[in-house]
Structures are given as C-alpha cells and as structure tokens.
Length: 233
Image (tube, rainbow, N blue to C red):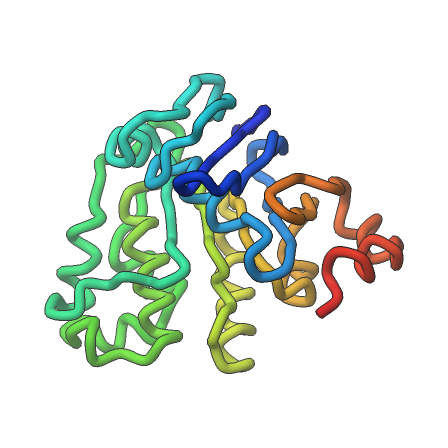
C-alpha cells in the first residue's frame, strides 16, 4: 500500500530524515516507533505533503506521490490525523465531519456520521457541540472521524495517544483495532511502545531520522537490546 525509499527531508539546513525507508502492506497496522524528536512526525508530514522531501520516493498504491500538494494526496485516498488535532473550534461535530467528506471509493464501505458514532459513541452524544468546547480526547476522536469521512485507503495517525488520560487511550486503541478489522491500512507514529504493541503488526524503529530496525512486534518485544538502545527513556 505504501513504500518509502531513500527519503530525505530538510528543515532549512537541518537534515531531519536521512534515507528513511519502510513499507506498509495493505490491511496491516504498522508503527514508526522512536523517542521524541526522532523524525517520526516529519516522516508523516513528508508523506502527506505538508513538508516537501529533498529526495526519495513515496509510493502510494504504486504511484509516486513525493512532492505532490497535500490536497491531491488526500484526494487519492490517504488520510492524515495530525499530532495537534486541529479541529475547527467554531464548527459543531457534524459540521467538522462534513468538512472532511469525500466521495465513496470503489471497494470500500463508505463512512457516514452514523457509522462513526458507532465507533465513537461520545461524538454521537455531542453532535451539535462546537469543537472548541470538547476535551482533548474528544477532539482526537473527532479528528480521526473527520479524516475517515474522506473514505481513505490508508490513515496516518501521528501520536494518537499523546496527552490523553489512560481510559481515553484504551478507548482509542479499541477504535483503531476496529478500523483495522474493517480492513483499513494504518500507519502510526508513536513513542508509547506499550500502546503500539496492542495495535500494530510490525514496527520500524526511528532514530535521528533513520530507520534503524524493522520487524514484527513480537520480534521487537523479544529484542531487549533494541528496546534499551532506541526506545528506553
């Protein structure tokens, strides 16, 4: 579904991503794991087009999208849930969802507000509430729901557990697992390895803008040296 090859991204003169490479198979959940500042969010922004890569290839469904405008990438079926949520504070839950609406895609069951309220029952109880009057966890749910209204084939989730209460983190994990059960392809960026272990099939460990390890979550759990070197705080 997604293949990143030799990706380099700069912020000014700072070389952030350095020959980054990883792949995400159709229907799987894959996680970019690493400490804060490792380059995970930059990888996400480079894929969706918010940051222009200096070099490298980003193949989505076999088509190279590197350097394309974000709206074109989104229309091709790639959804993005940013780390800072970015709900429309003055719009209601229903209005936020309408902003994200895109036509149904062939072979995919279309997302509707009714389906999303089954996935996130809290949103269904506050459909007329402005986004700015919601908790952080509710805003995170709304951002994911708004992205799903675009009927994506692949969703990028940037630090979905960050700053949330444990009970909300658990609800978020259950929602992501439900999406995975629907056949949606998911790429997470996380520094919370415990959260990722309950969701992801495979992991790519990121350190200083490089992919330094890739494998199954079971292999990562068994490799104490990798976890101690790259993931321990």
